[in-house]
Structures are given as structure tokens and as C-alpha cells.
Length: 67
Image 1: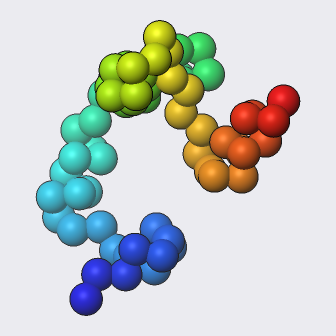
Image 2: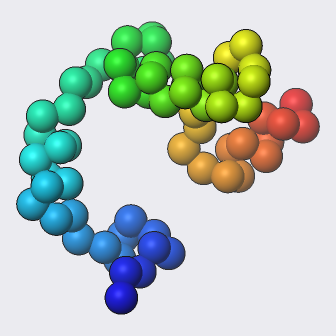
């Protein structure tokens, strides 16, 4: 059984560890993280929007939506 409640109850597989070690990295605060940039572009395209913004939690997304 796979427990998807939280990333704190799962352990990364060897493939996941490899992917993390080989991932391109950058500072997403300055728009320099290529993975986050691709994720935002894909989300915007999927939803038919001009742009998208990744936030790390549902609570943060809810706060942004009412501001």
C-alpha cells in the first residue's frame, strides 16, 4: 500500500533519490528554478491561463485567492 497522506510518511525510492540528485536547481524566488518554471508553464497551459504560480500548500493558495 502507498500512503500519500504526507511526504513525511513515505521514503524515497532509489529512482526518486537519483532524480533529486540530478535535478536542475535554481532560486525560485528569483524565477531561476527551471523545474518550478516548467511546472508553472504546464499548469498555465493546462488551465488555459496566461500564467500560473506554484505555492507549497493549499493554505497558501487559499490565502492568495482571497487577497
